[in-house]
Length: 469
Image 1 (tube, rainbow, N blue to C red):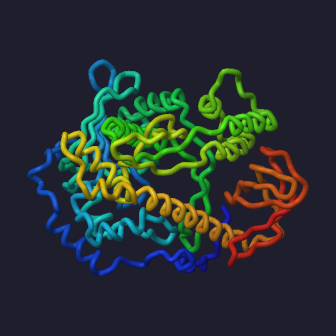
Image 2 (cartoon, rainbow, N blue to C red):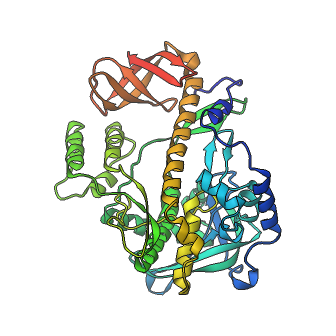
Image 3 (cartoon, rainbow, N blue to C red):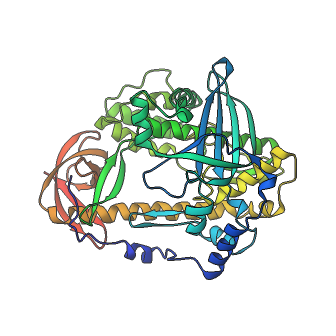
């Protein structure tokens, strides 16, 4: 693995470039401190679910824990999913300083040297976080699922919960592989597989592209790694998707809510994907949907990587759609294959707090709070803006580390996979370290392995230049 020198840089210049806030204002911090001492809702109004053995599954070292899960087997071969979600509305007065600052930020931004949180750490990493051994206010979803993986009943209410263990993905995967999973997630593999099979039948599209990740180097620099997605990642995501789809159904039935939407791809885009598959010598069996075809590919093969890169064209136009009184024309997300809403990450994402309040009100048979209704016209734009910023910051961080990592290797040759190619330049993925870049020269076939030479690195502009070796 190639690493930066121990003197590898920091990301202060990126924070300045994107005008990221360095801290919270004194009014925001004061309101957060007051909320910790005296939450808005009393514990007496909540169901006591502290006896349920919830666990959390997050990246190693995470402190902003939105979700805790417990999966029980039910009669008839089905399942009961208990999903506890951090209740940020219990701490945030509508229209107050915390609320206004969260709307301005939109979501937590993650940089290698520290995040830019949506809420002050006293909440996001403290009183609101579902930390193990701590009693916390939560929104508790209980979803009954039949033996085929289909939901049959949903209940959502406010509760008090207590997580008993904090796990990371690799630990849970290792315990499942060893045959001794924690009882709270022992049924996760079976339910996760069922939900994944249903997703494919629904037409869900999952792009299994390699994920670049930045790790701190023991010597003080930065290292780029390629993190494979394990089964627990996928199964855990299915529990979140199950909850988000249940939330969308509640809001659609009530004709008020905010959904995550994505239009169906144009037929021309699907035809173009078919031509790309043919050019890559990947057989698309007759009668197979896009979802079925992509799910059957081996993501580790170069040709598959190239096709997944091309498939991003099918998933354009994602947004947030709010409605009150009349359903919008588009209520579904083509990448998920159904209606879906964000409700499972309120510590890290603004829209979840509002969508959750709608689901709670509708489920309890009461009016949606006016502060929520008033926000529906603004939240989609606030979220879209923060999504755009988050994507730019993430890409800039990766580009910067790529430049730092490669700066001392000008003139060296590397193995690469061609992801996309045109007559002028090719988009390539270097295999070690996992670096993406542009390669000049004669157009190579997509999905082919080629040898490239690093010709230049502009650290300030975060640009790498390669040529065919």
